[in-house]
Length: 140
Ligand code: THU
Image (cartoon, rainbow, N blue to C red; front, side, top):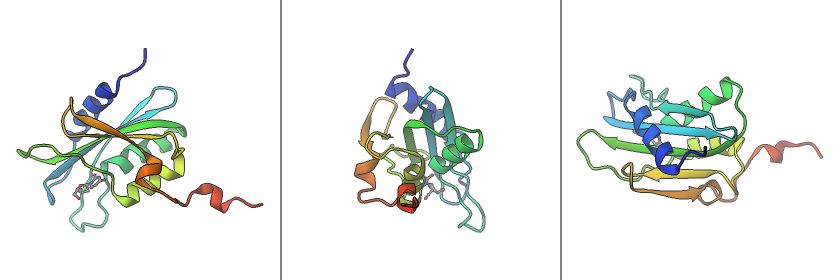
C-alpha cells in the first residue's frame, strides 16, 4: 500500500525528535522515501566547531546512499525551535545540491511541512533551477 504524503511528514517529525542541535536550538527532521518504498530518517547533527554540522536532509541521504539506495521519490522536511510555531523549512543550498546528485529534478518532490497537517509540495527543479549535475561530467 502506498504511503501518503501526510505519513511521510509524520515520519519527519519522528526524526526531528533525535535532533542534536544544542547550538542553534533549531531542530530539523527529514524522511526520505526510495523508489521501492524504503524510508531513511535524518536529523541535524551540530558540532561545537559549527562548520561540521550536518543538516537533516543530508543525514537522510548519506544514510540511504551508504546503505545502497540510489533511487529516490520524495523527502519530507520539518524544522523549528522548541516552543515556537512551525514554519516551512526549505532545504539549504548544499542539501539541494546533494539531492540533485541522486534525484531527477523534474520528478523529485520536496514536502515542506509546518505541521503534520499543513504541508506543501515543491519539485527539486523549482528549488534548484539551471542546476549542475552528474551528466555535466559525462564524457562525450
Ligand atoms: N538545517 C537543516 O537541518 N536543514 C536545512 O536545510 C537548513 C538548516 C539545520 C542546520 C543547523 O543545525 C540548524 O538547522 C540551523 O541552521
